[in-house]
Length: 196
Image 1: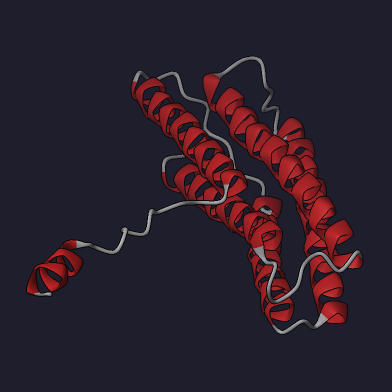
Image 2: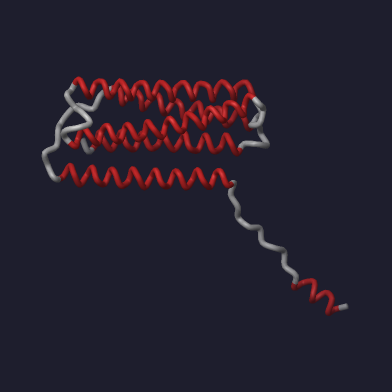
């Protein structure tokens, strides 16, 4: 009997494996690749700026206002997440819709920033200072469009009641990616203002 007790004590519980939703894993890989891309580009910006022959111009004020719009969109995205956790479906749909609308407003304001740059004779082709501005804002805008697509899928899922307190993966992916894009823009904006 004592041998049986000893044998039983040797048996260990299997350790729980760490796992991540495959879609979340892909999202995080995508985020890391975006971070690496913009880190390389900001490094190239600093190196090229140090070489001289750098065009001085005023950063359009609309970029400041668009930054505020994007921060507000992060708040509405968080509101959507809180609403989903509480199964408040009407607030969830409204919050995602407002976030989407603010994302569109941000893109429009970025375009207006480009219009102001052209009025200042800052073009994509020419001095690298202008080229970097268009590349930074354009690439971020492209990624924000991908964020809007993710939001559309989340909104459709919300209308089909696929997002709720016990099924948050899709909304968590959308929210994480959206917040990342907001933080990325704030980094780019302050980088451009400081190193302009």
